[in-house]
Length: 364
Image (cartoon, rainbow, N blue to C red):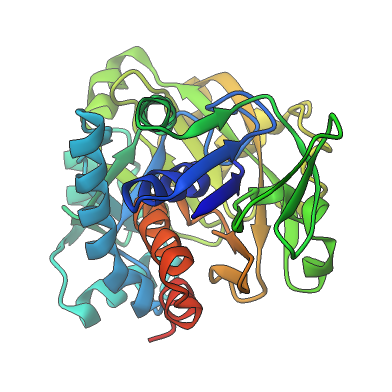
C-alpha cells in the first residue's frame, strides 16, 4: 500500500514509523524543517502523565502509550524520556489539582500525598502558605520532543520511507490526490493528514468541529540557589488555583518551562507567532502562587504555539477508504504520540476505522 502522510509532528512521524513497520510504502511531507519549531511538536519538551481527572479513558490509555514509546526507543536506539514523575499542587478546594488526584485514586493508580508544608520542604521553590496539599506520582515525566523528531526522521529515511521536509502540500481531495505548492500532483492509496493546527487549511470543511488557538510558553531562569532543586524536580502538572498552569523542569539540556491553559485565544496558526510585549511576565505570573520569589526568575525565552481543539477536548478523527484526518486536540496529544501512530497505521492497513475512533476518543 502506498500512503502519503501530511505533517511531521509527533502524530505524523509516529504514523509513518508504524506504517513502515507494517510494510507500507510511505512518503512524509512537512511544510517546514523536521523538527519544525512552529509546530506543537517542535518545542523542547512535553509532559507524559497518568492523571486525567474524570477522563478515565485517557488515564487508562497511558499504559499503552508507555508500551508504544518503549517500542520506539528500541527502534531508535535511545530513550528520549526522562522519568521525573509528576506533582499536583492544590491551592483551593475543588481545583484541577484536586480533581486530578481524585481521578488517580478512583483508578487505583499510585501516588503519595503530603501537606503544603511538606511539599515546600521537598521542593524549596514552593511557598507553603499557598498550598493545601501536594501529591506526587511516579507515572510521568518529560518527553524530549526535538530528539524524538530528529530520531524518527533519520529512522524513516534509513528504513525506506521518503521524507520530504520544507515541502508544503497545497491541496488534497478524498480520492487520494495531493497537490504540492509547486503544482506537483501525486496520488496514493491512502492519505493521512496529521497537520496539527494547519489542518483546516487542507480540510476547511472541518471548521465546524475544530477550532485553532494560539498560546505561548515561557522559559525561566531560576535564582542560582534554586537551580539544583529545579534540576531534580518532577513535572508540576497543575499548580492549583484557577489558571490551569503547569511547569516542566530543566532536564537533559532543556529549560524551565511554564505554561497555562488560560493563556490562549482563537487564531489562525500563522498569525501572532511572535511573542507579545510583557507576555513572558504574564506567563511567569500564572505560577505565583505557588512559586515563591517569582520576581527573581528571569525570562529566557517566550515561544508561541498553535493547537486545534474540539468542543470536548477529545481527539478527533475523520476517516474513509482513502483519507484519514487525525487531530490530537487540546495540546494533550503528544504523550500519546507513539500509540496514536501505531493505532492510525493499523486502521489504515486493516480498514478498522470504528476501532480507531473508539480508541482515540477514549470515552470508555
